[in-house]
Length: 149
Image (cartoon, rainbow, N blue to C red):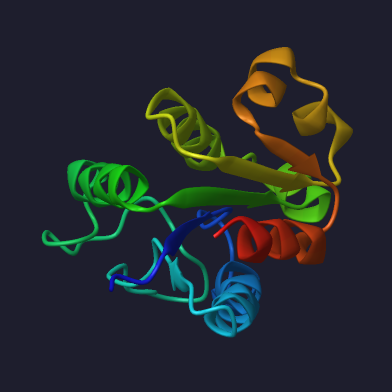
């Protein structure tokens, strides 16, 4: 039997290794306790330098087309998408890719969870319309994913 999967969308560009990965590691461990696999968009994207950037020279996984293709594949193939947009990171650099991934998942009829403490994100009518669940803390989002799947 195939294990259910959750795509873990959230800030990457401009984030250091911890900012981009720590919450995903926590999510993968928590979801794993339910038998759910967390799918990170960073699994193939190398960190070059101190922060993730959009100018990665890796032709296999670092180009815009490669990143977009891999992420669309993941959203399409996962059972659910969880988008984590904490205000602290979103105010520094908005995560446009995560918003697009939320919209992809919504358009594909996938359950979506948007976790944000940023009113600018939570109150946007189109973003809000794409979120099946709109929550303000990661643990609640993980509880929903675990409960649904």
